Each structure stands twice: as C-alpha cells, then as structure tokens.
Length: 353
Ligand code: SF4
Image 1: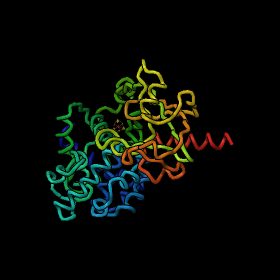
Image 2 (image 1 turned 90 degrees about the vertical axis):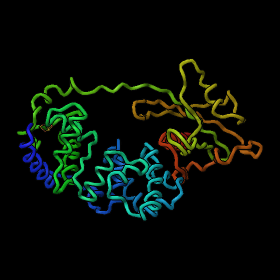
Image 3 (image 1 turned 90 degrees about the horizontal axis):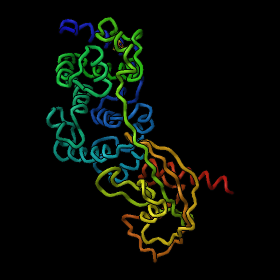
Image 4 (image 1 turned 30 degrees about the vertical axis):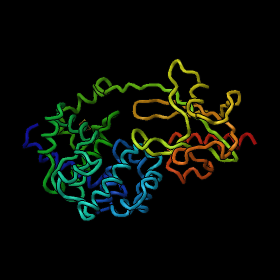
C-alpha cells in the first residue's frame, strides 16, 4: 500500500475505535503511572486476566512513590496469580528509579523511559503515545499481526518503518490502541472477521489471510511436564519454601516440588525437595492433581500430602521455609501452582470429613 493510502486507514481506524472500543478501566485514566501499570500488566496477558488485578493494585499503590516505598513482598503478593513476576519486580525497581532520578515524574523522553527497569520498546511507545500524546508507535503481538495482514509486510524492519510512518501526530495514543483493539477483537490470531473490519477495503491480504489463516498460523510446540508437589502438614499448617531471589518466579513462596525427569523415581524427587524433614516414604498419599500451563510448558501436577510433626528440632531456615495456615494463603505472595494445590487440599479435607 502506498503512503497516500495511509490517511484513510488512520481515519477509519480512529472512527471505528471511537465507536467500538471496550470500556476498560485504564482507558478512563489519564495519569502516566496508571497507564504504565496497565501496559505492564497487559504484556503477554489477556485483558480478562488483568481486570481483577488492576484496580486492586492501583488502590494499594496509587502512585510511583507509594509503589517504591512498599516492600517487594507486598507487591508480589498483590501480583500473585497474574504470572510473569519479573514484571512486578521491574515495576517496583523502576518506581524507585522514577522517585530517585526523575523527582517522582514519569519521564516523557524515550531514552529516559527505556532506561527504567522493564520498559522495552513497546511499553515506552505505549506510554509516550497514550499518556503524553507523542507520535511513537507501540508494536505488540496484536499490532504486528494487524499491520502484517493489512499491508502484507513480513520483515521486522519493514514493519517498524511502516508503523512509524502510520502513527498520526494527532491522537497517536488512540490510534495505537485502535490497532491493538482491532487485533484483539476483529483481526485475531485464530480468526479474522473481515466483513466487520473497518479497513477491509484497504487490506492487502483480506481474502488471502482468510483462506490461509489455518495453514499460516505459527504452530507452538508444547512440552509436557510432570511436576509433583508436596504438601507437608503439621499442627494444621503447611510448609512453604521461598524461591531464590533471582530467576523464574523469584522470591515467591511455593510448595516444595519440581519437575520429574524421565528416569527419576517420584519418591526420590519428593525427598530431594524435603531435605531433613521426618516424612516417611510409606506415608506418601496422593490427594489430587491439576493441569497448569506456563509459556510453552503444559504441566501436570500431582499433589502428595505428608504429615509431619512441627518441632524446633527441624531447624528450618526462617528466610527459606515457613509454616502457614492454608486458609490464609492469600496473605503470602505465592505461585499460581501453589494456590491451585491448596484448593485441592481444601476440597480433599471437605470430602474426607
Ligand atoms: Fe484483518 Fe481482515 Fe481487517 Fe485485513 S480485512 S485487517 S485480514 S480483519
């Protein structure tokens, strides 16, 4: 499509957005911090998953200052269940940077934004265009797909050049959101409803993409994983351990357990994760299992219950292990897998009464 055809695309997309955009809480906000938070939560996460977290998080930490002052554990607790916890850690770190280096104001400069923890090209473009009305593109997965289909471009360089040319000086934030909205609701990965699309007359691949959508869709390879979890119970409490401060799900509390390798025996794995605890091999009792997906991994997690006397003689390192009342699990920043396992324990208790 030539540059002269960009103007109708902009106009039609903006008009469509004005009439069809979903009423989402972050679209009612104007302050850059609230927009930054939404864009961070929405990374690799669907709108419906973010909704229950967004207002709660904003109520707890209404400003960058409030977030910077909060202990990381409290931040992780409110993020618990949303996944990709590195985002919460980076947000917390970046809030301190904003307070320390920018006198509490979110920077309006691209390079300064990119220097904040966790802010990549997409988030910087989204904040600049939505919060500060600057004509920067914001290319996420939805926008990449829509532009790819609409203009029949595939290469990343070509796509970026096009996105930069396309974003208007007037209403750049609304325009970027219109592209994202179109990708989320009309021109989706699985389906494109070209008949309802506001730019179907301009679209370079309307027919082709409809015919080839299944054949050209990228196939994701999933890895099947078995991840047994141990619930060690003593005096009505269960034992949680804390993950390392670095790496996946850093700093969260979780039930002991881990990935079972092909040649490993279940009992060896469980005992390797329960070092020094007086739990007997004979006492392993399976109380249920659940399925869970993390990025490309499909996890089956069987749950095993162990009874264990709570005693000072256990000498558990307080910073790594903690006895917790399972009915108060939400007071801790726990992984989603741990929350699911504790629900299974509650069901098991209820049905075995
Ligand atoms: Fe996507 Fe169809 Fe619209 Fe083209 S016409 S942008 S393929 S929904």
